[in-house]
Length: 259
Image (spheres, rainbow, N blue to C red):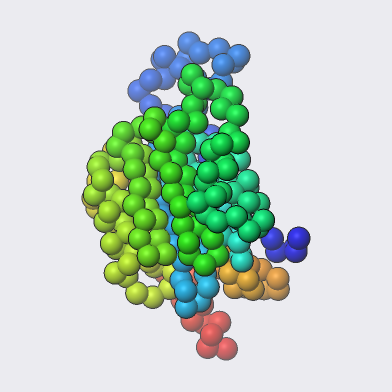
């Protein structure tokens, strides 16, 4: 495997504040699952057939969603793992894509091989994931126990998925926005997040957002496949802050091209 392989970006929960603090205070260290909130979020995966770039973006009402949800590798693909999340689906999914499995086969294998170690409180029936290969083929799964409203929609070179959402319009509008937006992949992914939020987004609100885009030698400096890896860990307006970062990166790309 090359030095550049396995660039990842993230989204696993380490902290959340809710009105259930008093109840959580009664939980014991012997059962940490009691304190794990689901990665309730909406995310989008996308591919640009012109540049060969593939990536994803995510927003959630949790701290630092860019710490486990999104996993990507140039010439391999991108994975989003969320809801009653098993973060290992990310690296496992990329490894299966490397082996030549199709996205549908990857989703099937991940679910079939999941040992479901916490079926009572962290069941694999609540997993939500999307897998896109390096050519934009995609397969998505929403488990029947993912927190309502939960679902997904697949379009041309795009998938949108989420849970604890205002309703199906969130993912529908995300796909429509991605397909209608022109320009760099980062702006198309961003447009999808903005459309999802405008449709109601995460019913609990906003806190963090993240984006990753990869392409072989697509990043700055030598042997860097990461075109963009951006995180907004804690903000009242994380999507607006992500837009600022995406626009800053776009100006930087233009300066580099002008040299």
